[in-house]
Image (cartoon, rainbow, N blue to C red; front, side):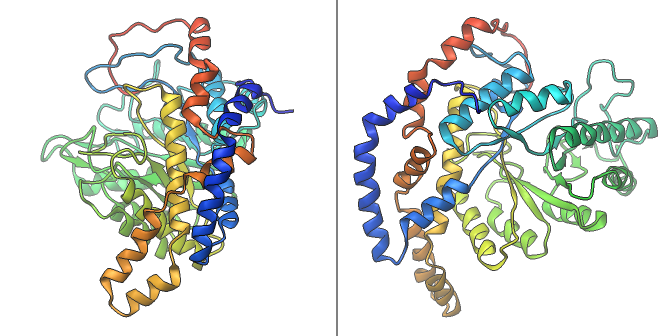
Length: 429
């Protein structure tokens, strides 16, 4: 039997305040969509089946290079993190997996499985860390990890990734995500070709250890912490890596890992067209890799990404990319941000499902630019909140996520149990 962190009676009481209005709004929207030839229940069922993973590190307060301001009731370890993730899953009914980051989440794998199974949670992709030095490690990653000039350092980074695979095999994960901060800060500091050769040799060793039913996701990022050059700096390099490795290797697209104004939805289409789109880390940005809440800055771009995904889905029934939130919550309660972000990702998916595909194709074929863009705008401007809320209600989730979470008093309760963390630290956690 699945355990619940939030008392179900609290959810029921909050839902009772809003259920009547929701049914009216849902029926009204259903009538409007029916005039467009869209069955609202079919859209709701697809939304209800959609899931996005929560990163274990996301439930802790984030920070910048300059400072970190801890919040109340922060998780002390991975088991506290799993409980926080269980709250998000219970209220949203859209986040049934957790993505771990090793070594920070390292614990006995069987204990991890038991802790997650209490709440009917599973584990998403494993995440390795070779961008920061762990306590007690022999070789430093200051000058690189998988691409380091020093072979002992590369070997250490490889072994760490192999350890992540072994942990993942025990807990039921089916993928490994590899992101490195390797690069350079000065012209001439590294030989670009040699550095990339080192990276490819290292990641090939990791790829060779993958179980047959696993995937390897490589992630690109144009800058930070290396500010002159980065080893895996763009989607083109990422594609080359995936092609070089083999059929189990795919590209991961983080929405924040791009230069301002880059057409991310076109990158999505290109990678998918050639069979190398593996999945997403959802967040938002204004200036660079800001790791802001998904949909908080440019919700239309998020919709356009999902428009491409739904288009691919209509042509390839076997297309199932991985979805995960990857955010840093510096000034909000992380649980609140993650809940609302999960809902906004669902929102973009629901809106994309409303696009008149036949009409859009006809406009594109006929070079009717305005008709084409209007087809997208009509779907995007449709308020799909009744669909999202009804999907949550029918699965035992909360109609109003924020109000129900705050009514539960969860943050205050865990703050009484978890020791307060002293301020003054820096760095992203």
